[in-house]
Image (cartoon, rainbow, N blue to C red; front, side):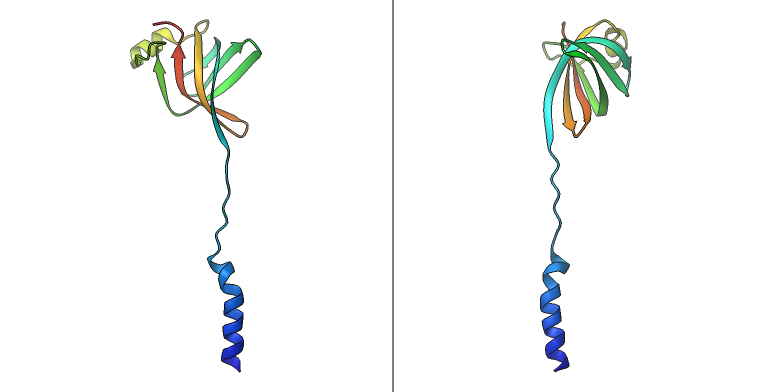
Length: 108
């Protein structure tokens, strides 16, 4: 009798023991564009957009490119990415965070 009760108890509990909880996170990828009003390398970039000012945070890796797609080296980034320059940013929205992974200079 004891074995039968134990078997029934295990049969009832087993599906919960192996069940997995799954959580989905919605991420969207989009672009913003405007003129740089604040720039802290590796941290934030703020743009004056047509809809108003907006601040973006940098993701783990950020690629800087020209409009034609040429990747900028570190020296070019230091001299060309600054306040007053028009850019587009490619970012991934995760909840309220906007993490930039690409900055596109609006010139070649």
